[in-house]
Image (cartoon, rainbow, N blue to C red):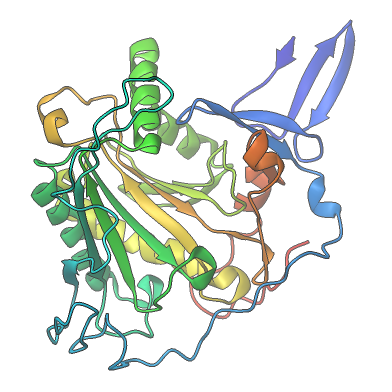
Length: 371
């Protein structure tokens, strides 16, 4: 028999009439990810091992405010010969090297279960957040971030009726494969539901059918009550290190009320979102006093034909996946066991959310290396 509460520091295990104590912060265990119907191995003791692996170079901090040769800057010429306008806020354009195009031919099918193909069509856009190259979202003012949020919502409204999935994502930092330091994100709209949102769709639908409440709405309420993995909160939003987190400083951004998609947010909720995004990303930067790398993206209810369906099982949310582990120069690698068996993390989500995200909102934090 296991005595367990969702707000865990230790677990009492009664086995063969003997009371055992599993200290969650010291002993390996598995945690369930209900959004992916998968398990994560938590090896809380592994951070004690010495590190002699790869050390990353710190991010460049001498980015010029304006570089006429940077294709994302105002007034610059892009690869296709088009000249960017002298924009002073957000700027949206078609990706010059898109992964998806709207007029791709149908590949046909081999009619064999081992050799299946399907058509893949869509559009890819790039959205600049700001005209300056030496600024990032945490350095922008809340009203500037609000304009980014409004443009995200407009894109969902624009592309949603045509495509079942519109993926908004940002790769920040060279460590995450970002080839241009100018603050920007990408928007890929596809004629198909990609693997991750398709999995989240199934899991959330099944959870509502079984438990009678949207999964992430219930989860947000329970995390707000527990406070153990809570990073930030305000009137409309909260940020947590998920119970099932894989990446060391992974966070989940959730609205407090039931919201399906970004366009459904009220003006107050958008202002509140801009505020909590700035606070979260500033905390990230303060952890190691570096422009913190990450990949982030929004997941909302599918669009296209799904706009006419009951999607009440969905809850809007954003994922933040930073790669850093111990310091600004040591990263987490998803290799070996993670690629061939299952996801694994060092330390528990509670250990990362409590001591390290207490870093002050603002610049001047002195934390450099953890453990």
